[in-house]
Length: 539
Image 1: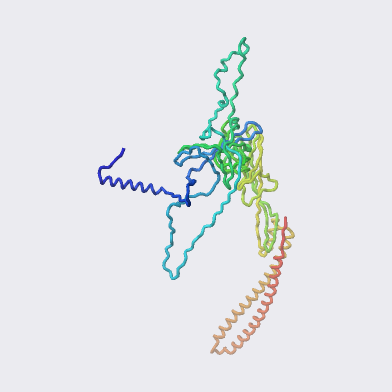
Image 2 (image 1 turned 90 degrees about the horizontal axis):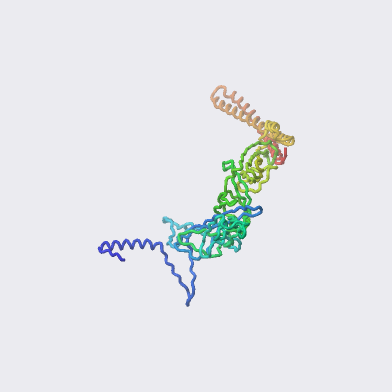
């Protein structure tokens, strides 16, 4: 069916409108031409990269019901097909890692922005930057492991397991309709029907269907079989099926603000697979026990994974702090340092109301400048933010864990600023001993010698200033006597007085020079004593 606009003007407007829409769509289209050199037919391999959503990871941890058995770890990758066409029988490879990526419009014309420069007398170049070279090194490695074999090779399927269904054969005759045993001529009783298989037993029989390998700093999960995912649909692709090393513990951190710890698994990635970060669920005794989140795990890496609240335990904490007296005195280059310690003890009280023993991991914060004191319990491991202490609590019992830490405190004094009062204070506070007191008093005595010379010099300088002031007064009087009857007599008197004062000034200047020499010698001796004093005393 075709539609034609009969009116000529309207047809022109509709045509222009359709041309405008078409030109807008063509902005998103790019034509690529491939040219080759040479002659003859040949095969060309052309590939492209299409943006797709990030694949997600989810895990299931199945805790064993038998003693000595290892937990089972299963993992799925959730893949979304949003490229607009079906993925029919494709090879699927999933890469785990955190590479940097960005979008740059390479197909758009790009013009350099030029600076606007006024006309100068001399032309100057605008500064520019140059990018460095990016070197990328690849390593090859292989790893074992994989996911489940679920369904056929042409499609990704999901299995719903129900207890009591798998493993049962279809019976055409009811067990209860058989004749009773012991009746004459009756056939022997039929054996009881087989017991339904447990889900954990079914899971343990699954086979690996994906292989993992290292790609430099990345890790690749490559499915052994092709998969099919329709457009605008998602699929759960099995990528991990392996036994894992895990210990069931309880985890408590005061920062969480609750007295109840968390149930957790202290998991060690004993496989040779890199486990990508994602969510996980825990099955215990064929029952859902909780779920949580995990970061990426490298082979051999150990991590705590919490998944539920532990209702059988409570934890309380109490803090105590104290400051010890000075325990050490150091004197180096004229500075005396008093070293003391501040101690803090945090006591954790744990109550286990369960009927079985519990292993509790306590996260104790790591504080800057603080260290664990001698005799404190040793942590099982240390993270950038926490010490992790483990303690075992018997059923219906209470246990305590005391963690004592200390930090050194230093107080500095310049020994040339100390006097007898300071020394007496240190003695009363037991911050110095007899040896330190003797050395300090030597320094103090020498400092008093220097101070004595400084006082004598100031006294002489004060006398000189007094004579200068008196001479100024005499000169003013002599100016006032000009033309008077007493001028001659008083001038002779003032002249004799000025002469005597000049003699005194000469004597005072000589004394000051001598005192300055003695003061410099005493100061040099004080500096030598201070520089030579080097003590490190434990009180």
